[in-house]
Length: 146
Image (cartoon, rainbow, N blue to C red):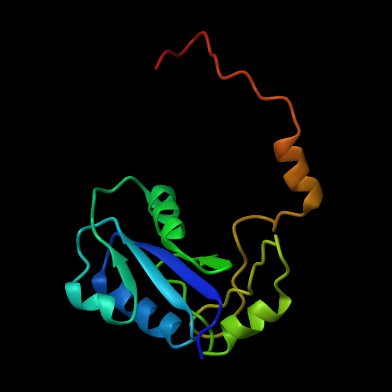
């Protein structure tokens, strides 16, 4: 069953890690897009995922933006290449909680099933507003010229 979601990542390291990513996420029913930032993806990787060819490594963010632009689904899930679903139903379960315009974060677990906390708090509405509606900091420093 195809889901109305595209899972995207950036490949810059081991093709084996990305190969596992392709297998696991495509088994959930999602479309998969990989931005090749390392010029390491084999042509055969495109059987279960769309691989955007190497055009240089402009970083993770630029690679993700490139992949998202190629998506035609209403929902996009951005992942690291070593982030895998816990089961084939994980993505479907996550979509059950999705609402239009939302940012959804799934529970992250390690290979033993133990919960892995993110490096920071999940942003709430107040945090997002504080980042958008605040006075910009002065970027000029007299002691440093770049």
